[in-house]
Length: 256
Image (cartoon, rainbow, N blue to C red; front, side, top):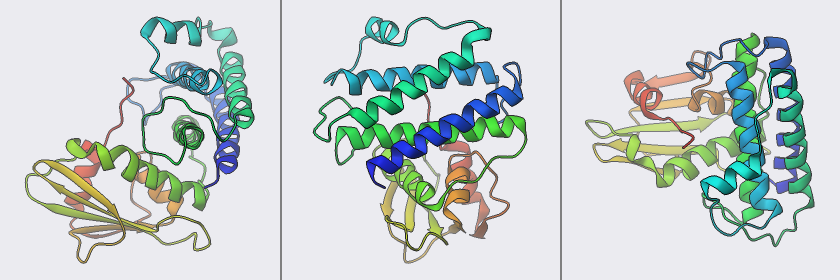
């Protein structure tokens, strides 16, 4: 996906996030974020947006200290102003990314073609997934377009778990294949291989010669399922479902 497309996806997801937050109410539980309320999630994502915008706006080359991060984000508002506070931070992030030069040089934490490409991509998916969380708190989760889904699967598998696969341990070697069935005109890979074993996982693009379990379906559905935001009921699960169970149990991304 192009940087501009990531920013557009970020903008749309943020608007949908606000709509879901207003419908749910701040005290509503968020089923896909256990022990969190809508309030917690609005605070979290509003914080993340301000944190991310600081690196881009200031061309920050090193990670913020705790004190610098607290100053960049500012104080947390009360309930009456919380959604408006979120909207202001979201708008500022979108505007900051759109105004940033392609040559932007700043700190980032996953491999990317450029720092700007990283921040646009990461915030697009951060916001899209949390949009799904809040929509789930209201009722049904909206769909994800094929290009966003393909790109998000690739970021999750190759970005997060490509370098941090130690959590994905299996007592015996098991292979999970992930296959996208739509988005033929979209850029990017359409299959991935997750090889799990006692020491963690090795992940690559492309289909394996053989797999213990294959998860197959539309990109948007696969994306939400791999982020554990939607069950795999509407996807094709071929082979041993216990392999998918290992993913469900151990594939977690934590904010630290």
